[in-house]
Amino acid sequence: MDFLTFLSEEWILVSILIVLAGAYFYMESLKGGKSLGIHEVTRLVNSDSAILLDVRESKDYKNGHIVDAINIPFDKLSERSNELDKHKSKTIIVIDKMGQHSGTSGKILLDKGFTVNRLQGGMSEWTNQNLPVVKG
Image (cartoon, rainbow, N blue to C red; front, side, top):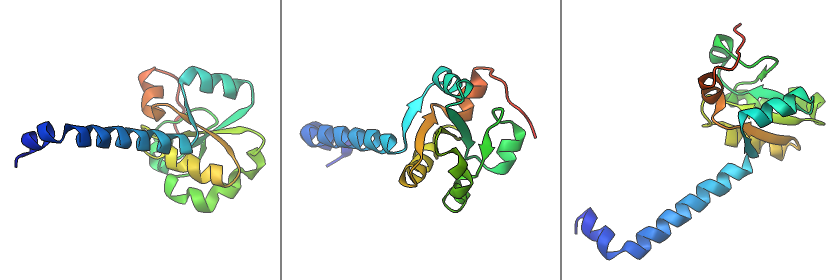
């Protein structure tokens, strides 16, 4: 039985699989905090109710990051999350390259008692909108 025959004969099973996979990815994305657009992130930071956490590698951070963003690389977040304890009263907005680590990073921080959101589209979206970055 080839793949197309399987799809046509077992379309109910395939449909259920697609729905379950979509629901799984949706639920996983919520575990790391709500995804916020650029305007909402800017509003929260400007009102001093949020800080930015950039979880990209240090070299990527040095090549360009959002002003005042704190850099703790994703692979060191579990061991260095205590550096954020002084910011527990604020929302932490997780920034990564394109969204690949922000959900997991958010979950790590949520489990440690932080309030967490994620920058939708990561630094890729920020730079695509020609918003300012700082180098160094």
